[in-house]
Amino acid sequence: MEMSKQVKIGGSVYRIEQVGNLNDDERVLFGHLNEWKKLIQINSDPCEQTQAQTLVHEIVHAMSNEYALEFNETTTERMASAVYAFIKENDWVILAIKKAGT
Ligand SMILES: [Zn+2]
Image (tube, rainbow, N blue to C red; front, side):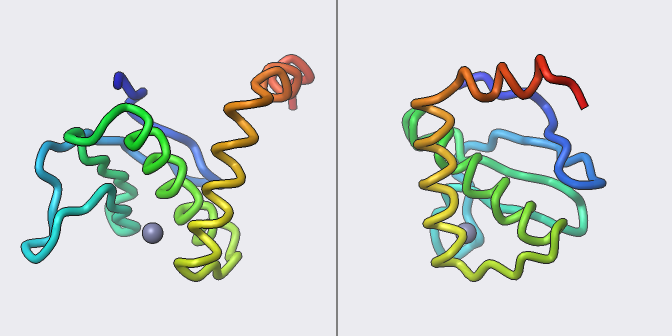
């Protein structure tokens, strides 16, 4: 899937990189968030749906850091699933928010 090159989360801009065979030398990773580099890497090998779900997962990790939410991995998983499903089923809300401005 074609992803934009960056997302703004809190006060930071995170660069998004799609990488084939993303891994940490021990296991294959679906995605990875590098807070130091403000970089989100998404493994480009899985299907588009998995990549999109992974992107939301890494974004929730970044939100947790940016907003000091202190989500653990389980909370991140659950929040990412909820956010993904909500956006998928209610894209009109996103459009309404954008139309409402800041
Ligand atoms: Zn995670």
